[in-house]
Image 1 (tube, protein in one colour):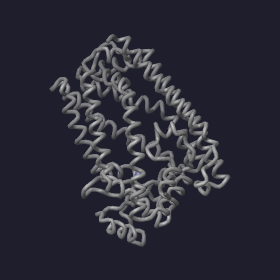
Image 2 (cartoon, helix red, strand yellow; image 1 turned 120 degrees about the vertical axis):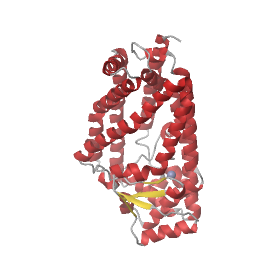
Image 3 (cartoon, rainbow, N blue to C red; image 1 turned 30 degrees about the vertical axis):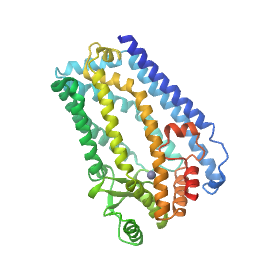
Length: 410
Ligand SMILES: [Zn+2]
């Protein structure tokens, strides 16, 4: 392998991924005006349907602009010595390998986040605002950014320091120790995400006593599901879009309902959504996802260990001397086609699991309230009722609404 060969591989990957994503988005956009399947006729009235089409088109056009900007940015960095420049700054600040890597990634991550700030600002305060979704104030928006940076610096910086320390100490075997560290961290986060991370961004309270809580408890008892923690989170602080999710396992498992979900849905519909979530747990989807992601991380780290000592992987991104952090960037790009493929596989399983969770809700509770809740949620998020199958194959973690409803009605 020589440096220019790796450089051309990197270019080929970046441009190839851009073209693939653009073609997929284009195909999907060709279906924006398709007639709505008859089972979904009652989701939108004519005016709302026009609004949903306008929303899809706006997001499509905005996506084209952001993806061109991202590609241009990284190509400019590669061609005009951006990585070499940041690497020199990092070297001038410290002789320590760990500190150099922290400075290098700190500049790149915070720098790219600042360059992307106008886009996320526009997305929130122009697009989401125009379609009536946005509830975020400007101060929440900026405070969120600062909190995310603080978390990235503490957690990302902590993990990166440990990884380099493993590398200095164990050589090529560093990947095994890194894998163990990331596995422990993933399990920890899975158990305590709701307790530790969510409160930094949202208020969450136990669901108050009343008829909804009774219905949920009755259902949980009926399917033999021990559910002590049902929480309500103030999702309405940022957006009108509704959601519900499951986190943790064992004694730490809990269901979190967005306040927007409680406002938008009838009680039966909320229990049906919860039954779907219980289905994910009972059918062991949570464990499957966790195990697979741990195995994929191990696979990636193993490949990283084969590439990390290869100076060409560093030099290909334009730096003047090989380093762990430059090789990480080079490897990250070289690995991205593989993660694209594993992403497609994971989406495939995820869509299967959605049907299984829907079936669970249908068999242990009822199909109709889930049908009506899915329709309401789709309507309230102006979601795309006619996606292109190729786009679904690549990007959808949930089956299109029409397929889920047909399955529930079957
Ligand atoms: Zn689901």
